[in-house]
Image (tube, rainbow, N blue to C red; front, side, top):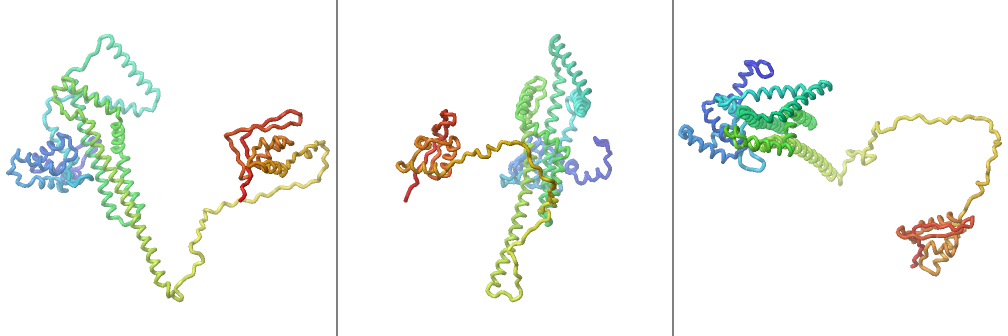
Amino acid sequence: MIDITGEAVSKNTLTTLRKSHPGWRLLAASNAVLVASFLHRAFITPNLRSIAQPDLAAKLDDFLFEVDREDYPRAAADYLDEWASDRNGWLRKYYPTDSDQPHFDLTPAAEKAIEWLSGLQQRPFVGTESRLMTVFELLRQLIEGTQTDPALRIAELEKRKAQLDADIARIRRDGVTPMDDVQVKDRFLQMAGTARGLLSDFREVEQNFRDLDRAVRERVATWDGARGILLEEVFGRRDVIVDSDQGRSFRAFWDFLMSSDRQEELGRLLDAALKLEPVKDLEPDRRLRRVHHDWLEAGEGAQATVRRLSEQLRRYLDDRAWAENRRILDLIRQIHQSALAVRDCPPADGLIALEKPVPEIDLPFERPLFTPPLKARITSGELQEGREDVATESLYDQTIVDRERLASAIRRALQSRTQVSLGEVAMTQPLEQGLAELMTYLGLAAEDAAALIDDRLKESVFWDGEDGTTRRATLPMVVYCREATS
């Protein structure tokens, strides 16, 4: 027996599958006809991901009455539990987070077995043209997608462009030649089969994540070692599935499907395809119209399983942190109790005096690296008398403003008034040293807590320059105030 990769399946592998695979057990079961037909009607035909136990038991009761209830005397719920047991594994029984009733879901192995049985029927129409075109299209995408030579890629695109131009010219000349009914049916049936197959793939992807979640829960429940080692092992398992070929393909498919533009485009294409007369003759399943919504629902199940895995890890971390904090608090409480017990009668030689209440931490890597001291290089020599003529008058031409004289002028102005502006002071006491004296007035205002400087108002101060011209400076309103006396 040869699989798709060209590797032979050994006899031991087939023997193991026959003993352990739920799909093989279903095909070999004595009631395989009953189980397969009911599960196909209950889950696959309506494309239901999950059914509550009362609803599924009611459907099984009705189905058993249709066949022969006397051959199956047990309650429907007992049959469902038997089919969901580890011995069979055809159904998955679980409790959703928002319900206290058990629910059932079809396992991927059972779905594969049922789909294989459905494929045994003789099909009224077998299309081969569309499959051949699909093979060519996939091979073309494979070769083009792995092509690294720009010249070859451009040549292929130019070839396709020439073919498109020829098709456009032919349509303009001869008109459009539509597909015949056989071609339409062929492509539609292939599309419908691929769309239904995607739902089966979602169940298998979800089962893989579910198996990982189960393994994590078992590992956490029995783990008593270091937390870091467990987390490394768990995240390693998760990365193996997420980063695997299947995981990356599922993530790319999910990103593509989550695009609203793609969903609208797919809906329009399905509507147009279902309105074609050859397609109507096939009497397709009405649920095919909303197959992309079923994809979203099925994909959400896989995403929910991943979220549950993350929640499990978070709860584990929270529980471990709480346990460690409680252990620390218990140790501190024991120390307090021991200290209180010996407070009144301390032992003679049982206590150790500590120099400091807390230890000093001196980390070696916090010490700075050694830096050689800078040695100044001094060149000694005889001093020589300078012979350059340098103007030294500027050293003696300095403007010195008497701050006390200006402060006295402000105090005299405030003897008869509670406040006075800088402009008024400059009018009664003209500026003798120009801008330097004006800056000194501003410095006095900045140092005086009672003075006010209002940037919203402006005032002008005038003085006579050395050349006889009148100078003006516009600055914020400065008001000197008399200090309040108690």
